[in-house]
Amino acid sequence: MSDVLRLTRAHFPVTALGYGTRLGIWLQGCPLACPGCIAKDTWDPDGGTAVGVGELLGDVRRAIAAGADGVTVSGGEPLEQAAPLAAFLLGVRELAAAAGSGFDVLLYTGFEPAELDADRRAAADLADVLITGRYVVTEPTGLIWRGSANQRMLLQTPLAELRYAAYLDHEPDTPPIQVETTSDGRAWWVGVPNRPGTKQEVESALASLGYTVESVSWRRPR
Image (tube, rainbow, N blue to C red):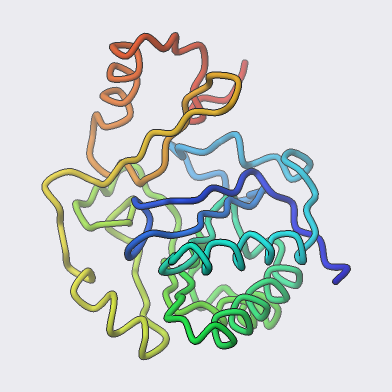
């Protein structure tokens, strides 16, 4: 398979971005540049790493074998890579069907449904769950997995209805956040910090664990 995606990172297991235990995939490049975005390191379309769709599907195959419940695709703006993303999501559906697995796809996009052209719509339609809308820093929300009150969670399949209907209006006491470390000792985190002060709390918590916070993804280098 010759399709290539520009990837920021892939990680398993992820427990803070969707139902159950998941493979997380972050795609590189975003033209929307929402003020207050927590992932400014994913904006540059030339950043990250070029990865073949077939290689990423190998990650999906291993995640399914390990009992994963689904894959979450975020970014960046995933629909900026609509054609290879559609090829990837078609492959995910084929792997899930072959395994007889209830393996769902949750896809984040900053676009609204009405903004999607044919290619973006084709990719978006392959997701079970679609979370739409730009991040608006002045519209905080307590809704799980959403960054601001304008964002909507759209359930597009029966599997999505089964798993996610209870979460449409769910507001946890604290947003789910997952902290991971890289092989070179750097910390990064997974989740949607949708409450004021959450980012600062994460910085303080990392410092209390002995990490030196030299830079963060929500501030662009000067």
